[in-house]
Image (tube, rainbow, N blue to C red):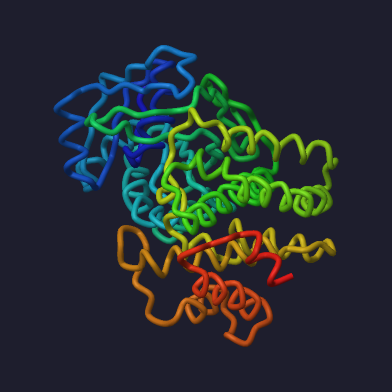
Length: 378
């Protein structure tokens, strides 16, 4: 059996690949990073190490790596499974190659997106439809709960959680998925929303408030006294609001959220504040981890001040790292940029409330006290 993975980064290499090795798939990575492609083809293997040392390192070998160009079209056409791990915003670059491969397929293409987003499968499906009217493909999706990070001092090795949980959209992929840990989930868009509004909302708190306080290691930020208490305060507002929004029991939502907290506070899981905060401009979007749960809490009659503060912290992160790495240069003030993202104006009540927190952050930038920021704006 053959599998193609678009993206040989931490998710593609350190998460998806081990499910496929376990089932003896021939793996082909497709990448745009030529240096990474060279390392993969030269070394021919890498190790996945596990944070809690509760599992011996997992060796991934016998793969090939290719640059994203027309040479990969025959490869894609022969794949039994096709995975994407490139970021939702980059799916449009993958779609044309998948479309070109459809002309050569003998059976239906099975594609599974592994991106964060409300419905990345729909994003890819819509991109494919721009280029073809063929229907010999399906696009399912998963939600990645597993943390992975490159092992410093090695060329390709990965640190990962010992997580064997691969939920997938079974309304689209109705024939099942023969991977260890594969769990069929109906109404997957709701499943992804709940994950983003819980796990990713908490991750955003750790990333952006941790950045304000000068943390670099994610687990240290998560265990900071102020940040830990603020997450508890947020969940008192967020859990009942999400339970009502998704029509589930409060206990079920609390269990889901507590699992996220336990993961994030595990000091054995090595991860980085800057890495988890990147793409702040995208994460400030209407359907993302800060603004969407903010509105859900307020619609439930709750207090969302913590998320207003976190939006201001995300703007600070973006402003200070603007033009560096994956943070685009700001063409206007942070509040102008946010208004543009949210398709509103600077006089909007939401923007003005975030502005109040942002101004206070700038005023106190060299001696941030999160409790004081919240108290002064309540």
